[in-house]
Image (cartoon, rainbow, N blue to C red; front, side, top):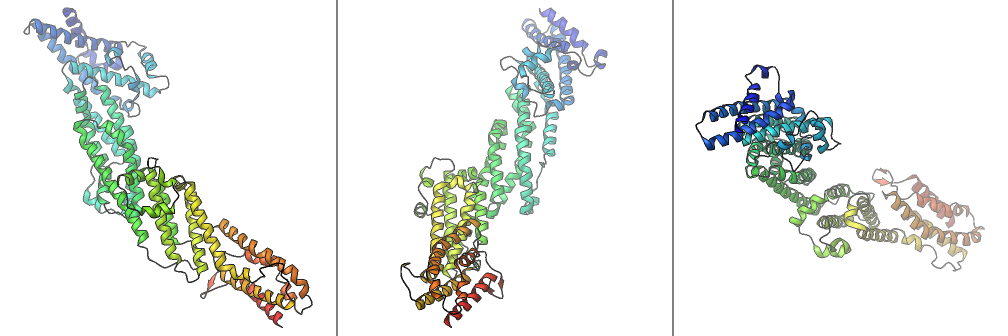
Length: 604
């Protein structure tokens, strides 16, 4: 059998000797004839076994010298073939296609599969790969199989170094080119980076996130699968090969996040969202990074990624503390003159609602590094469910966001005290609390804070509305008789009309400058006031007007009917144009004029 192996090997190896005439006429043995490629691989492996036998019998025999020469010719041929397949099939070895081969036979070696190849080999292999793969993936499966068979053969014959030399050269250039196309620079100078403004860094982060997802999950992961597949015969060789291909790429890929993390040690709180986007992306990629760079020679990549995540956590934590401090340090007494929504309310709730969209990152960071808060105040102010289950997802995030809103509402209470008019202070509280509630209800905050939080604050909103009504309209309500069954004389009725008109005109003119921004709240408040005032006035009007018809100029009173009262009330809370420091609307001017005339005529 040894003699037959030598003869067969000599015939086919010399036939495909790169220096022979027959070889020069073709470009590749594997693409020219898979049947002869199969025979070539078999003969080389049989030659190896024959050499082992000859060494055991006579280490100085002529046959062993012949076998050694044939082996060197065969390895030279396979080395060239390996390079040819790698360089001419780059399109079939793209990262998206390399995972297909892993579905082909986990029990048999590539050599066993390869040795079953005939002219219909593609159908056999692809049945094992699955029917859903594309033509490109089919071609990729065959190319990867050829590379693995050659690598296996060269490695078991002791020519592993010759095999991986070309592999590293070609595949590293592909990985480097891939990162370059994704916009990942090989070298970022720290001095140059430090001079960049935040706007430019934001742009870099946005582009990096897109590039990193492709770079890790597709480019590097695909390259790892290909390398593991081709060099499965030797884990050591495979690791060494991938280390030299991907280590530099991994370091380059995660250099930018490290520079950002180092630069943003004390960032402005508005930068937190890009930092959280960056942290979330790297955190999501970590399982892939751990699998791709999973041996000691690539530990520096894992170390870099973990260090960057830690620094980003610290920066985000700093942003959170800085934001809360900003709330507490706002001592400005400037408030909207008409009691509307404060600019600080819009910016603060925009910030907090944006935080809620990063609840996973926020929970992780706050859980590891809790921020001090007034627990007793928080427990008093919020109903139990938000504080109960500490094991519930996003619990830490929910509690912290609730605390931030509580801190801000306390600041709003302080600002409300800046108004000299208590009615305006309640309007201010109404507007701003309603804005907070609307923001919570329409964003991710609702899922985090829950129905109990909402119910608590809607009750507080109703309390503000009731306090406003009492402060602004009590005198008007009190100007009419408390008991409807009381019988007044004509003079007493006139006095009551005069008192009502004066109090209503004063209240209306004062409140007409106020603004309620939320349409629903505005309508509810007007309906509430009208429901307490109009029926009572209508009853009084209908009871005593007939008694006064004999009085002169009584039509001036008649002009102010209950329906007129409803019309005036409907005009409230839209605000008025401020001119020369005074605020006045056409409706309020009309009311003032008619009231004065009515009261004046009644006096006559």
